Length: 120
Picture 1 (cartoon, rainbow, N blue to C red):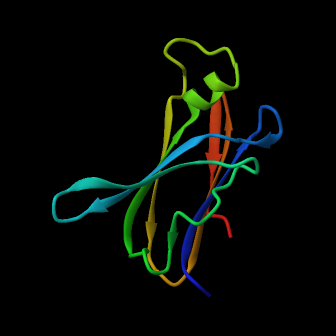
Picture 2: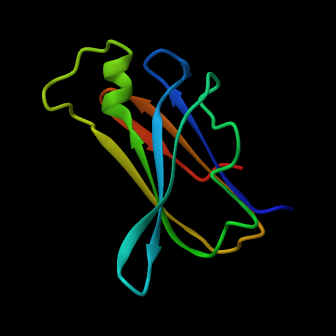
């Protein structure tokens, strides 16, 4: 199996993939104690990215964080939100224990909540 990191975002409020949602990938640096931004992407019409966030060459074991910009997505979709919105940026902090495995981090979103899990 080839190691990679992927994600998928579904908007459960409309029962469709979340197209155009901005996602940032950060990696924890154990030496400095800070997170370092690795990349930033937007989801395609299927709520996925056109390529993995990390492939086996770029993957390393350690702590990572995905930031999903859900308030901006719902604003762009014309969804009325409180000010400030209940959810702004949804962080999902996770670990990669084996760079040769596939780590899939799906996110289900709605204006009032979200859910995530380790996918396959």
